[in-house]
Length: 360
Ligand SMILES: Nc1nc2c(ncn2[C@@H]2O[C@H](COP(=O)(O)OP(=O)(O)OP(=O)(O)O)[C@@H](O)[C@H]2O)c(=O)[nH]1
Ligand SMILES: [Zn+2]
Image (tube, rainbow, N blue to C red; front, side, top):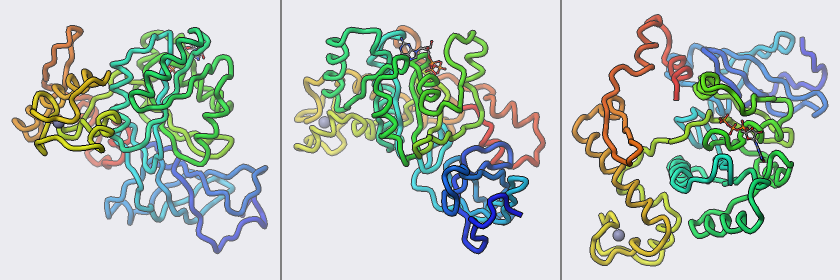
């Protein structure tokens, strides 16, 4: 019987959120209903009903699920139903995320505007609103901090300037994250782990100063996990990748720039399929800082599109390579890790497991 005694209404439906997935097991954090906060909300290790498997219903981190047969003594249960997802991210695989918390450092590593632009566009493509944090303010003078903030405001993004190391700006972030599912992203070394450790002291992620090999190890972490924030809300670490791929078609790209959206809201280009390069009477082309970024990312998107048009299955067979010189080319993926793994594994392994364990 239950450890939680009289508090539980066994007749009521039990709902919760999947916070971790490993193989065919799902860690479900139950909703607060029926428990006092001192007890902590129980989380149960669940399997999913075979009926769900049969109908091809996958279960992802972030999913809202109905739990049956709870066994509080052993901490186990069964997922009987999955609510339709509000949002679904592929990388990292998370359902129902509300926003992306983008972390960059003002210094060490110094802020690279092209990299920031790329991350912002990747965040825009997820349709989740990006929330931008500039960390390590202790390393640059106040005047420069403000210059960065104004510059990014021109791009259409407000940012919060903080120092995780000096505990500055953390309260504001806590407020922003309360009650939401947030994905944390950003390049390596900017202080993401340090920030998570400060927000959720119980987590204790490894911070910085990790050797090259180990570092890569962390970045290929195969399972995503949602960490519960003490003040409510869930946070997912997306293992650092320095260069998110921008999977968008050329026409879509312009919508990822707030500066361009603003221009398009005020009028329209002469041609409805304007790519905003050298077409006559284009309302987007002009004197805004990131117009140059737009043009370069547009070339990428066009090159990508051309490859996709040539080979129907190109998305999985080609990889965009960008050399230091900026030269771009598509290289065939000879044997992706996914295929290698798959071949070593039993044919009966279900898709969900492969999905869970795919490197992204
Ligand atoms: N000066 C300063 N250093 C910081 C601050 N926040 C984090 N650091 C340091 O920056 C380094 C990298 O921090 P991490 O938290 O490991 O960065 P990360 O973004 O998780 O990096 P990856 O694990 O590579 O993705 C560590 O040495 C931290 O101590 C800050 O506010 N100021
Ligand atoms: Zn145009």
